[in-house]
Amino acid sequence: AQSVTQPDIHITVSEGASLELRCNYSYGATPYLFWYVQSPGQGLQLLLKYFSGDTLVQGIKGFEAEFKRSQSSFNLRKPSVHWSDAAEYFCAVGDTGGFKTIFGAGTRLFVKA
Amino acid sequence: DAGVIQSPRHEVTEMGQEVTLRCKPISGHDYLFWYRQTMMRGLELLIYFNNNVPIDDSGMPEDRFSAKMPNASFSTLKIQPSEPRDSAVYFCASSFGTAGGTEAFFGQGTRLTVV
Image (cartoon, rainbow over all chains, first blue to last red; front, side):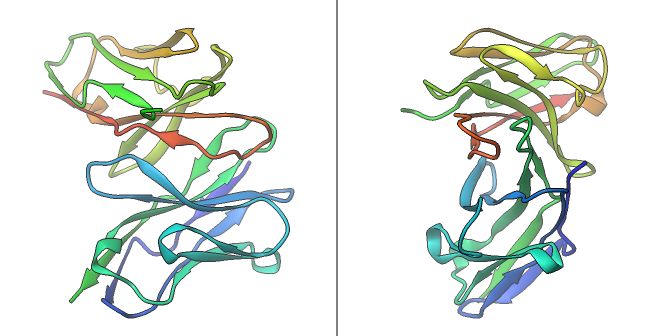
């Protein structure tokens, strides 16, 4: 069965610094991968997704992620973090057979001034 | 479209009472998902529907939980009787499934507190 691991429970970065959130997945075939963001008291919003093709995916709010099959990873990056990026970030893998999405445990991002 | 609409946003109930959570998916979406989010267990998929038919309910924790989708624009998640350990945020999400792994659109969630 597919699974997603986000090794970091929380990360703190300074405003303006670069960010990388880690995600590793387990899936037998080519995965459908997602990053979602959840602001406090809100539902999840899609940042970006990977289905196939170019392994570097651009998303909203200046985020990007790179799919690396050899490492089973799909890390999220942003070159310069803004205070408004403070939120919880979820990596997810889609089940191509059943359309359900399995989420990682999430990484909470704190941004310090 | 207004997005996925969940009601109520907050629910406080006493142990043993019946609780019903409601969801209106995005019009035209053919998949509907119910998730539960807790600090301990993260985001868990409880059940999902395709064209109003339950496809996978393996995530439903106990027989106290039930979900229905009587039509394409409405779904309910019912807990009876409720217990304090059911306290969590419950999310409904919908998607249009042209292929595996399509984007799920989430509602704002219902925060359930059982005292």
